Length: 119
Image (cartoon, rainbow, N blue to C red; front, side, top):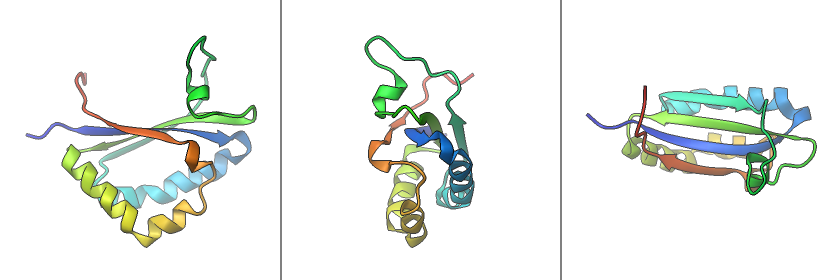
């Protein structure tokens, strides 16, 4: 049985764009599911403290009026995730959605992770 795979995202979203962001994510969810995502979680920053050396806000160069959003997708395997990313890059629906993102995608950070503890 293949190990699940997680892809995590961190973005800075203008606080004024909260409802627009939620709609954007909800509209994208069926596409992500079609591409192989088995679980999608979007989390609006609520208690994101400033650190002494590093922190979430600095990681995405969040401005004073922006909120940090932490998201993750779960896939059945890394192979499914890799195939999904290829589909996302070539699908015209994703290109259209990318042109209307309610945040600065250039400051998004992301990465793939192999779960090592899942209780």
